[in-house]
Image (cartoon, rainbow, N blue to C red; front, side, top):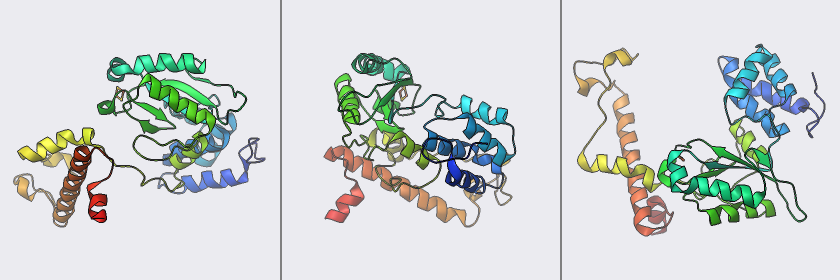
Length: 286
Ligand code: FES
């Protein structure tokens, strides 16, 4: 097992200790495999054979098991990724809204194909890996791009080329939803569960995503109560949906409803004002 340095040649002792730390978070250690693989990527920029062996050893599973997971999920890369992974959604809705055109423009602009990384030109401070992505579940902001898994909403070919130019030049770039974009390796470390302090940046949901919820609220629509056989909680009473909320959970659900309402209210204020300032922030300011 390679275990040399943490500077690109082997994972290093610190990383092995952190991999064990992740595994220890879970009642079943193998539940930690996904964040462990993200940690490997944060150190080596991709999933390496050593990373696979390390995860397998720590979790006491086979390398084939680990490899099967690493090759199934598209967030894990077997080839080195540049400083910034730039994804363009070319699934149906984004494609027709301009995603295909954006992807085509970026391939020409960067002179790379799908899943390829730019060379560093004189003056470049970062490299970019371009990849077309399947639906990012952000269709209401189509066409959508992602940089190291941060959303870039309502993109155009010109905003896309400006974005990659800024990334290569080393400029500070923010998601259209607010958070500062970090490097591929930094983002991978965050996904491994090591806080980067950015978790609370940006809104949890924007106005277009909440339109349906707002309509439901206006019309008094609610989700049907699930039948009892879908619950494991013996405190539920199927005969009387009103009593389907076990004691003690009613307050939690009321709080959740209140929270939903405040999110919708915030989003509506944002939409009216045309800014990203939330209602709470406006309240604070007034
Ligand atoms: S089709 Fe692009 S986010 Fe859904």
